[in-house]
Length: 191
Image 1: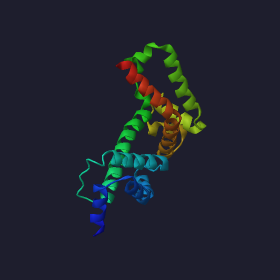
Image 2 (image 1 turned 120 degrees about the vertical axis):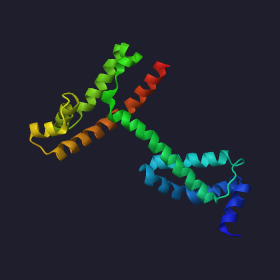
Image 3 (image 1 turned 180 degrees about the vertical axis):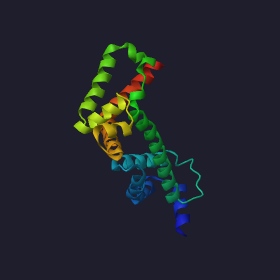
Image 4 (image 1 turned 90 degrees about the vertical axis):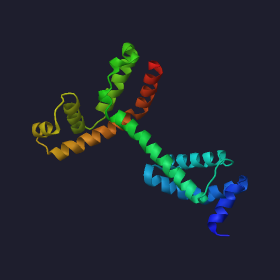
C-alpha cells in the first residue's frame, strides 16, 4: 500500500487514535507552515488547531481524493489567507483611524464615549517619541505633505517616511485593543 492509499485509508476509518496520530505527525509542521504566512506563533497554532477541529468535525463527510497531508496543508493555507485578509481590513481601519467620522454614528452623541476615544488617541500620540510625534502631528493635524515636513524640519523625505511608519506602527499597537472594542461598539449601536 503506498502512502497515498494509507492516508486516504486513515480518513475512511478515522477514529480518535488515528486522529491523534495525524495530529502529532502534522501539528508542528503545519504550525511552521502557517507561521510563514502569519508571522506569529500563537496565531499559527490557533489556525492549525482550528483546522484539526474542523477536520474532526467533518470526518464523516469529507470526501478526499487527495492525501490527508494535502488536505491539511490546503486547509491551513486557506485559513492563513483568510486571517491575513481579515487583519488587513482591520489594520487599514487602525491605520486610517483619523478618517473615522464618528458623527455618522450614534456614538458621537455620547460625550463620554467621545471623550474616551479622544483620550485614547491623545495618549497614543503622546506615547510617541518626540520627533515621531512632531512629524505625525504635522502630517495628520496640519495636513502637511511629507515633502513639506521634510523641508520645514530640515530632514530627508525618507526620514519623514520612516518616522511616519514608526508612528503608525506605535499607534496601531497602542490602539489595536481599543479599536476592536470601538468597532464592535459601532456595529452594535448602528443595528
